[in-house]
Image (cartoon, rainbow, N blue to C red):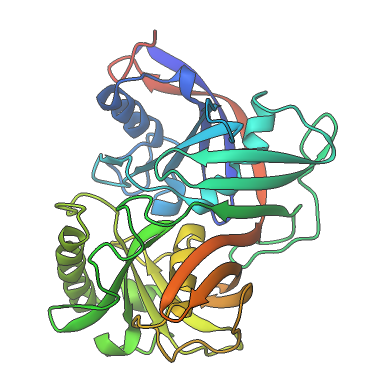
Length: 363
């Protein structure tokens, strides 16, 4: 069987991992591109046995990079979520964890020249229009991966990568509250439909008869909860102007509860057909905005910060994710200025990934 080799850098970004590729090395046509990514990941099998996916939604993600023609950005980041088993590719969302690896990958791929001490990489998230300033540790010739920063959900420590997210409101829908309300009711459950970094449908865990402290396994095995959640998500997606979202991973779904272990609030995030093992970076920003904004379903849940910037500790199944939210609040008028996080990334492999000629014969 003839195969096509495509250069890639394989990286962990935050609590996700996947191939980072030069957009110019891939087909321009979206249908052709989808076939390549499906073959590359091995979508269609629960273990992705015939590809480099890891059998979970956090390990079937792809980052495609290119030099940006934007006046502000250095690098364009185009994201694709490949399904584990359904042979589908969703180009609508973005991924903040994979974005953590964009700065180091851009340097590894020669798109950005490294500086001494640290290198700032200005990133445009093509899928949503968000702008992100990433600060990467470098020694003048290469990326420094060793360091003392630890993030829950990843063993050990690594060099810190500082991220400042800007222009995160309304990237998918055009507004922070795409239904025009801060609270909506679907199937008897009150939710907030919000678009900050990621379009989400957010509810209180208690309204589903949950504590919010359930484990990943307990939630994933709760078929009645998932059936009800998906029915609500589909109605909310239509109300948010996203159309029929039955085959799309957006909007994502999130649950909130009062803090249990010293954080600001307790969260569970869904991808959306399984519970996230920790918490998405984009989702953390939307959940934080929901907690800080008056009139949402999160009213009364937040413990701790008042005033801007606010540092929130979002409890998730594997620990806590800290988010610094810079915002303004004038009466009921709430505006997100930016969100800051510290994450880590590591290069795992580099070389060529191969797909059959039946998927793509190359240019």
